[in-house]
Amino acid sequence: MQMSREELNELMVDCAQNAITTTQEEFNLLLDGTEESLELVDEVILGWLARYRDQALEENAVFTLCNIYGAYVGEIFRHKIGGNWSYDASNPDAPYVVLEYAGNTYAFAGICYQRLVNDSQISIKNYFEQAVANKMQ
Picture 1: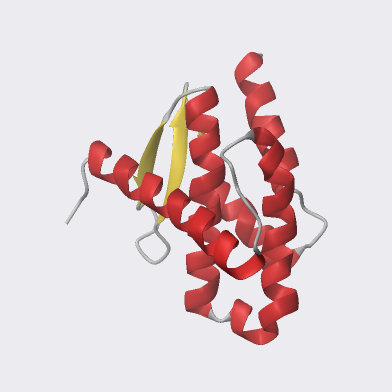
Picture 2: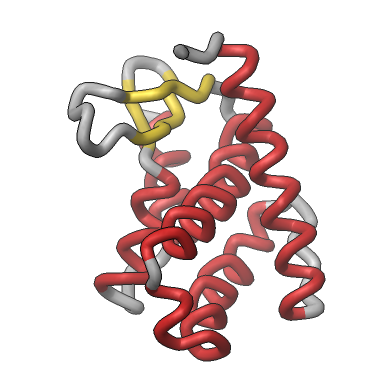
C-alpha cells in the first residue's frame, strides 16, 4: 500500500513529535523545533550510544532513531524552506524516505544513520546547513 503525499507528510510530522517527546523523556532535553536545537540532535544521537551501547545499534533501534530524528530535522527544513516527504522505493530491499525540494532530495534519516552507526564526527547540523545553503544558490 502506497501512502499519499499528505499521509506521508503527516506521518513524518508525527515522527518528529516522537523525537521531541522521546528526547525529553530520555535525556531531559527540549527539542524546540528551531535550527539551534540541531546541535542537540547531534548530541542526542551519540547519547543513545553512550546510554544504551549495543541496544542502540540493533536494527530496529537504528531504524527508529534515525527516522524520528531525521523527521525532526526534515520538519525544521520544511518549515524554513519548504518541500514534501517522498518514499523512495527504487531499491525494494532498502526503501527510504527523503525530503524533496526544488528538484533535490535530502536524506535526513540517512545522515542520522551515518552519525549513529558509521562516523560520530559527521554533523547533522552541518548537513542541514548545507541543505539550506544549497537552496540559496
